[in-house]
Image (cartoon, rainbow, N blue to C red; front, side):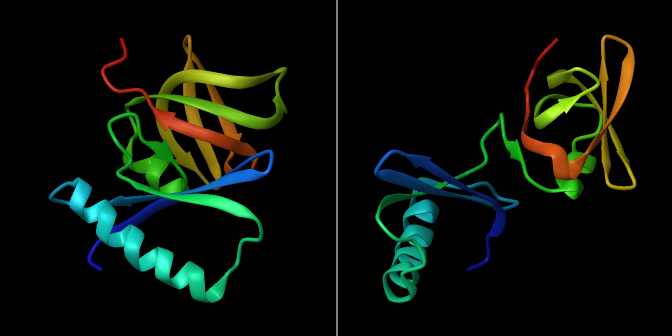
Length: 134
C-alpha cells in the first residue's frame, strides 16, 4: 500500500486483546492512511481469522516517541535518547535510559550515565525513542 510496516504489538488484557500496527511513510502518516490500512488489514483478518477471541485492531503512526522493533531501527536512531526495557535483568537491571550508541553484532549499545551497555537485541522487551530529552 506504499507504507512501511514499522512494527506490530499484540497486547492481551484479560478477555480482550489489542493488535496494534504501526505504519510509516517518508511524507508522514495521516488519519486517512491509518483508516485505509485498518480496512485492508481488517478484511484480511476477518478471512484468515488468526486471533481467537475478542480483539481490537489499531493502526497508528510510530509518533515522535516511536517504539523501536528491529536492530536496524536502533541503528537509525544512534545519538538519540531512548528507553529500553529488557525481558530479563542484565548486569542487575532491566530498565535503561540513555543515548543510543549504535549496534554491535546483534547488540544495542546504550550509554547510561557515561557507562556503555551492550544489550542483546533478543533480550529487549520494548524500546522507544525519547524525543527532546536532555
